Length: 211
Image (cartoon, rainbow, N blue to C red):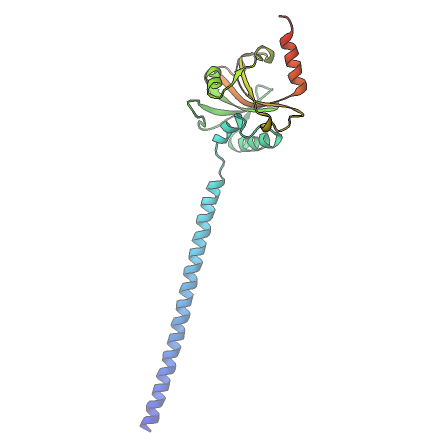
């Protein structure tokens, strides 16, 4: 009897121990699951934070675009326009151009700039000061003789992109230009500009006219 009793107690103890082990295993599994879930959630949050940061627009891209990096095209101009619209309100008081003033300087190489300009088939930035000569030296521009043809421009430099970089050679020429103009007093326009072959020929014809 004692053996049976002991056997019964032993069986109950064994059953109880098994139950406890199962519960502990379930609890442990639950904790592991919660830890995994928490880690995944944290990972997702961190990923989103860094992802959104990585996708944030770098204003220095405005300077690159003014240097024709990438070359002017409808797609590149639209991208710059969309970003400018997100960051500032356009000043259209000049009628022929839309100017967006940014909250901070995005210049480089000693040139300060915080304004973006859209005018016709060009995208540019306004560099503080009369810096056309300095911009010409830094970015290998040469006098294009178009200053007087462009109305109030007092200095005009340019450099056409190489043929391999031209996005549409059959339609026109894309150039980096730097101009000082009464339209932007105390500032210099640095821009990536597209000019059709027809307009370019017209400009050359005007240059050849006797003064």
